[in-house]
Length: 612
Image 1 (tube, rainbow, N blue to C red):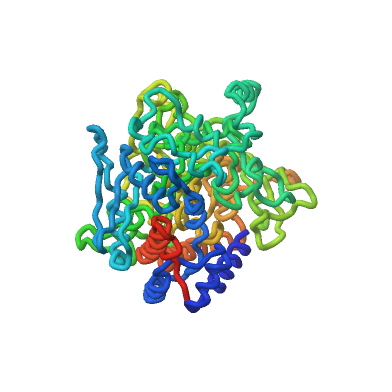
Image 2: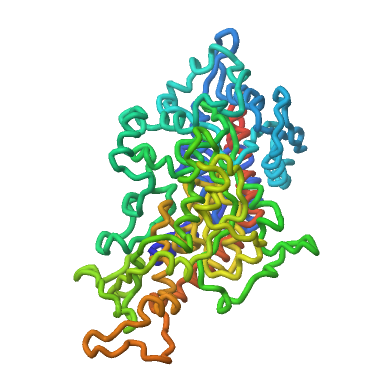
């Protein structure tokens, strides 16, 4: 997988357009139409700032595609063009609580928060201000229009399956009223929930569209609310199921339509924020499957802060190339590290917080966890063969190994292994009343530790990156470091098609079960674990101790080139962040979005199309 990821990324780099005519032809080939007016100025901006992936905007165009089918009716029943209907919906959604506006007027930018009947939101304008800052370099080249920006991290737009066809977003869609959101309440208030709305995005014949009773029955009859790597359709079938790796994050592999019981494991289905049930243009920093939000770069990525930016120097208020907390590669602690709050979902309906992604991860890594787990390592070192669980003949290779070295399984206490390879804990109990049993139960069932500064993360080889209320705002800082992110997410972001799992980071399924094999492959089994498990082992042939008194018990190594490969991923991720996901790359992305937006808003979209 690592070799294939590198080849895919290199091929992507090499096929990018080198000239404006090439870029125009590639645009036409991909999207079946000419670029928007101003594309030549965007190209000049991209070239001036050495933007690398000038053609890779498929994710943006997929987000915008449904809006090209919009048609509406005015209050007299006359048909409106797509542009007027787009503007009408923008004005309408601006009345919703926690939706802010970024406006361009004669090249000047402003953020606007429309009064929502006294509703108070302490997050208002945070993301809108971020978008405004990103647009600063291109605003002078843009016509007047408005961007509705989601002030919340969670997605807001859920369009039912039967409304995604052209016919169902045609004029009859909104002819009854021009203000269907006038009585919109920002939270669920006990009436409805995200999952009930979301499952209607699935095909009518899918399991998720069946009654709740059938889903409950499946759970009662033994279906688990957790899942495994195999259920996500991952890895080489020639290796044992226990030695499995995710080819990508769960965004690409989990189908909640086909496996509706899995929704219990993801907090965004329990968000307290009411969703919009129609095709409204709303810009959000991330998008889970089934949502209709339009993705923009996160303000956490674009801004520079002590909590989210690698290299941020508080004294000079500048971003340094090397963070003060960075440690040499040889000095990093050989552990998987994570710290965070107990966020991850809302309370609509109540009672499911224990199953949210962060809570499950902390319990998975708990130092007092019960039971045993098998960790598989390549048996290229004699010490590895003290295990009595060899891989069956014909399955003597790993899906990511470069050699055909056989594998050995070591059955070890979960608690013993977790103490040696993971340091994962909550630092803050947020909304503890939502957890079944309250704060006391939350603290009893999860490890809590002191908070750490962002710079303290760089002491560790592996950095676990988990979703919170939505996407993880720390991912870019993790990539910029000399550590390796292990990322689990159900979200797609603006850069998702620009980055390659297994080249720039290590992907993790939302079951987390591959954590042990990831560690085993790259780092082996730590010496303290070998001593505890095999310290008294004897040679079955001679009966002599394998480790005579006074012998220094060694670690069981991982793959021969495991550490070198880990460093390669760390460096590739760092290089990607510094060349593909710079602030100016985010500016290029929103500039391109703005050009498409201007065309979508136009009375005559042909006028806003670039012509030779």
